[in-house]
Length: 231
Image (cartoon, rainbow, N blue to C red; front, top):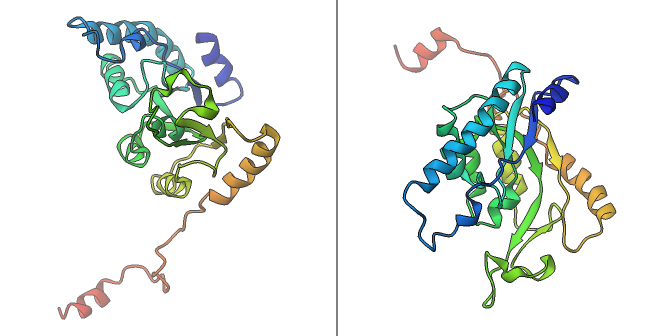
């Protein structure tokens, strides 16, 4: 990972994607009951392992962006906050935003942006759908992707509201790239790649420089303002 920090810095990259690793994932479901202090110990150990790496990335001017992913200890906002606290709110411990994993949990992936927008440095454009059944749900019953209630889809074919996401990204002046991460249980990858590139291009918002109703653009006029107020 320290080599990766230098490799990211060399071409001028400012953000690097990774996974957190999973010391605690096998205890994710709280039965059997977890021993007292297990979660705290797990996150302390995870932070101890990551802090030297985070320092290396900091020295190279690169953010570490954790993809919040099932199977990893960092898989939602709460686990990310636990890790952030354990690292002393390290400025390089940031987020790769991928809404597909939040659909499959399920979580409010739009509110997630509102909460963590200052820490989001990378963005995967990846779609998913969750259709609960009478026979299977979030855990999937060990089924293959086609038969699972939660499954990944090509952008635009799933449940993710990308127009709302791109609007949020524009609202918060996200400066990174919207990167196509293609995974789909049905569509051929070549079709998915061709459609995905156009899908992203069609959703990128060119942010306006002024309000839509500011047709005159005259700027502030203190005398006029006082006249309008009758002062």
